Amino acid sequence: MNVFSEIFTVPASAIDERNHVNNLTYLQWCVDAAEKHWNKFTSDQIEEKYVWFVLNHNINYKNAAFEGEELKLTTWIEKNEGVKSERHYKITRIKDDKTLIEAKTVWCLLNAETLRPTKITEEIKSLFQ
Image (cartoon, rainbow, N blue to C red; front, side):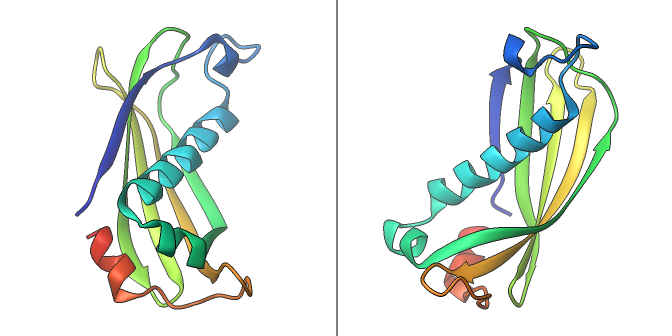
């Protein structure tokens, strides 16, 4: 399985009125990581031919994160079927290895020109297995 991870520090801009990371910020971090993972392993030709569309997000919030903490975000493709791809995410706090969120997004692959769903090719599958 092709796993993508990154470590980052929680910026002040991620903090809400309760002084912890805003729930929507976790979602944005996940979407950003999915894009970075896609861009890291695909060619310009693939990126020009296909785009992804979100069908649904599911996030389980387990612990809070705070400004200045170092976090690790990991994402991977769990399965591809037809036009759909199931991507998983996990964000942990570095200092105590606590899981902050576990999430899943179901994406649909679209032809970039027609914006119609298109079957995930073996080439794309092999890039993320």
